[in-house]
Length: 333
Image (cartoon, rainbow, N blue to C red; front, side, top):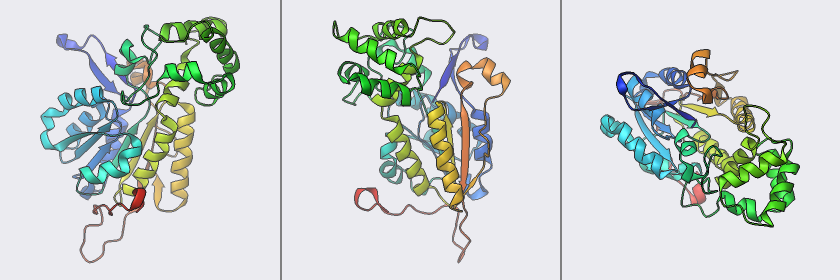
């Protein structure tokens, strides 16, 4: 949900948060069959409501169920989407809760799912959330403040090998062992409680800043993913969408992390091989030059999409929107 605050809006307007690849998202949703264009689109990472707003403006019959685990984001999205009245519903939910929350929140199978993965600029720009090393703040990184484990808990309690593996596999940091070794040595003197201290330690361990990218970037990314269990949550999200989508419905996923994109790519390709889904994006949709210039955070964004097969019409029923099947034990159909 990499949303970027664009400053200096014309006419003295307050800064707006612009969601990445909003144009391609709208076009993919515009391609839904006519019967689905009046259905529910689940924006499962609604964030500040940027994508939802664009969709509701562009598709006047569509309705959006916006889900997010961050209560502050939901509060701001509610303000932004208030003008759409009952066409917009918002609910607090993690991806692992979608299989339960979506059927309980809307009357029909979703016409589409949209996942905009990652962290929002609101979260990055508020030091007290602890996501960024750009300004010192508590070492937190929880998207949902109700989670028990913070980044400080991981940094101060995991052993050196586990930290190194985390930085390598979840962050892609090739010098993960050096970073982990320095962290473990430093925490013997005092625990890490602030983002600034951790960023300085990692930067020193990795040879200081020699490029535009801060040396602690990948370590912070790995910690954020671990705190919020983003890998596990993504698996739950894709499974829920596969199960709940209406015939002819579309699943759209925007990712920013290369490992995450690889997971999405493999999952959507596997769905296509079953014959029950069709790939709509054989190559990922990426931001054009204008968007990359206006919003640097769009540079790494990749959009992939599939469409669920249509059911043949039988007996005059509507094949495009079907009621959800009741949930069985532990979410089983």
